[in-house]
Length: 354
Ligand code: NAI
Ligand code: MG
Image 1 (cartoon, rainbow, N blue to C red):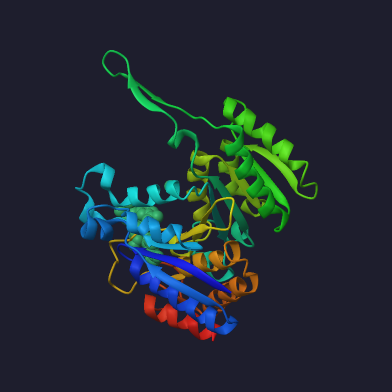
Image 2 (image 1 turned 60 degrees about the vertical axis):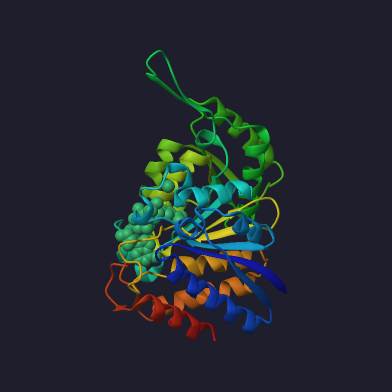
């Protein structure tokens, strides 16, 4: 299979962890007889330095011509004084929007070897394997915002969704649930918000096409509580943009370290953007300390969701699990074991793949 992959390392530890993803994908291509063509582009602070624009048109062009996009991370104190509209983070937001990536998938797995790294009790998080599906291009973050009143003393943000926007994210979540443990929790605030009442109606309507998926509606406040109390009860959780933003950060604590969490941003065709949940970690950039596993696991998601290469994706995940089983960790994971650097961790995963 031949695929074109856009590689956007970005800033800080982005480049260090991206090296891991590219090396692993090259090994996968060799082992499984595929052809992956990598094209590198600038984004974020690196693009501001070179082009004065966090999302240069050339980068967008590379992404549009690719089958999938890998992104490291953007941002850092070096660019804290640039005007808001050309901040590094604008590059990433612009890319998601321009590419129409409306579904953000964040799997959270409690790795057996890392349960002690989580602030939650072992018995609560053991066996957690859930996926938050967050709507990414609508809702209150994209609704009309303004200041009103004589003294600008009224501020307005608008939470708006249309049927199409909800249908497509709900459909995606049902598809995911139907190939996992067949349970879907739809999260809203239907006791207060009209948009949530419409969300519920649509979930019920779409559910008719997925009779083997068990559906439950849950209010966002009780979901926040249950994610800490009984996270093992969740399989796929689908929700609107802002609720998903908050719940996915909360759920990330189950895994113990940001350095372990991958993500995918998808649309209706197979194109997707794959990136670790963490940022550019300027405090450890260039020190060979970054955990490359979130980036490597993001590449595994790409193999599965954009290229339909399930076996290859599982091989990468298995390699990561085996390295953890051998007791190797990077310094962000606060458990005892053999602490190694970024490059060494990438080497360990490579050894398991070969
Ligand atoms: P951050 O995720 O970069 O770092 C938070 C803490 O976690 C730091 O102590 C860092 O050293 C550690 N950390 C993060 N990833 C790690 C890894 N792979 N291995 C080991 N340790 C890791 O978040 P922070 O510090 O709030 O933001 C730094 C910059 O990153 C800011 O400019 C922010 O805007 C940007 N950012 C970018 C994101 C993206 O590109 N998607 C997401 C979040 C923040
Ligand atoms: Mg957030």
